Length: 445
Image (cartoon, rainbow, N blue to C red; front, side):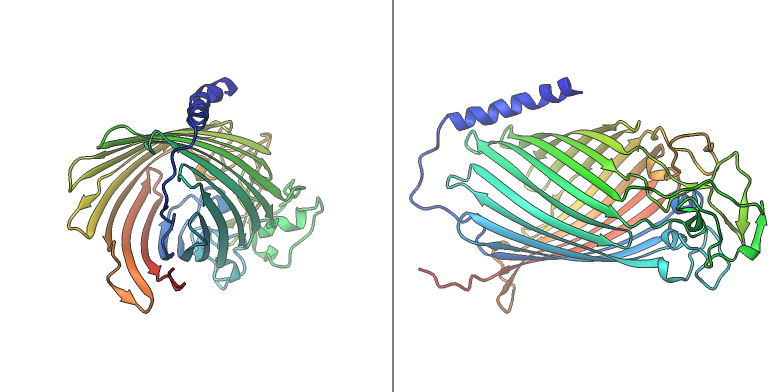
């Protein structure tokens, strides 16, 4: 793998170094600002999914979830060369599967295919990112740095990273590299029936109606909690893009990711085939939670080709091959055909195909054995084929003639996506975005 990585990256690095050695180009007397005015993006996504293979209930149960996520992004030109970007997202969701972490906190009898009406059914996810970018006078060298933070009911995350880009060959060629580090901390939330056993002890949990148990009445899982809370991710990416002709542009990318720490989700249940079943109402009590290795390496190779057919049609294609050391390999292929309806309106039909193999540690409901070292029934790690269909429309006003106070309307985007797997999982998403340009309030010289 090391030899393969060096083989792919080396030509790109040599090109970038060669371009720098050619010396700087002759500077013009004036230079254009990287960003002329402050830009404000207001985005909103509505997402809804459904399926019958929830990992929270051991690979068998409802996956219903709805999510509404408004986002605002503000890009501010600090001077001719520097841009500061701030974005914030608040995602409010209702999840039937995560509500079943504690299926006994509602008024109805517990059932893996029904959401509990308790407090665990909904939550809010918050995320904020700040980034700074600087361009050289000739606009051939760009570097950026960013900080991010996220918070959800079961984890907190802090991230930082940066990127560097080089343009050469009269800006027809670009090489870029980026690196990011994310430091996450889990809040160890276990399925409610396993919490009395998390520290190795036995006993009863007052949140569980033990008197209603049926099946195996001697419920005594050999469960102990995790001794780690951290999960760290380190990524390194490279991209090489080239304008091949007046109509054709292509790019190649390589992404490397390493993760370590607690990579299991503490509230994903496991049901063993060699253990007797215990129930309360219609809900089967867990034998354990998923256990996955403490490290994971990921490699992805991708390529894009964009072809300008004529003034109306453009063809955008993408392919990516992915593999990791958990046994998963996948293929992604997508195509988008923007259709320019008028000078301001563009239609975006798209299609995406995805297929992957199963992780070495995956098995479905009651297919694992208690003698195994690692196990999961998360269908995101299963073998499946997925198709995604999309249709979007965009309105663009380059001259921002439509005004709202000191804001000029630059663009409006509306897109619909439908996603489905051969396992029966389905999802729909509607996204809406509007971009404004804020007038420069500083006096002109």
